[in-house]
Length: 76
Image 1: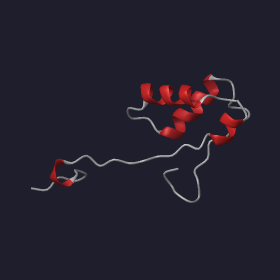
Image 2 (image 1 turned 90 degrees about the horizontal axis):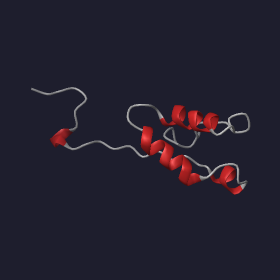
Image 3 (image 1 turned 90 degrees about the vertical axis):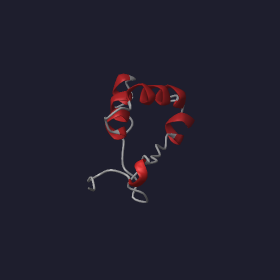
Image 4 (image 1 turned 135 degrees about the vertical axis):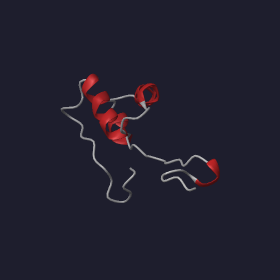
């Protein structure tokens, strides 16, 4: 019997996502280590874009920064 959505051989399927924070870090608007810790604490089921927006709001920079998906790669 085949199960839908399961990975073959019991291996977990992983996805890689990239959050480009180069400009905000360069401009000293945010610290990448702080964002990394925030995401690691909350990255269970919620989406990265949602969590990134939540982080920006929490740190009072949501009015100046915008989270967008890259055209090059839908996972960025």
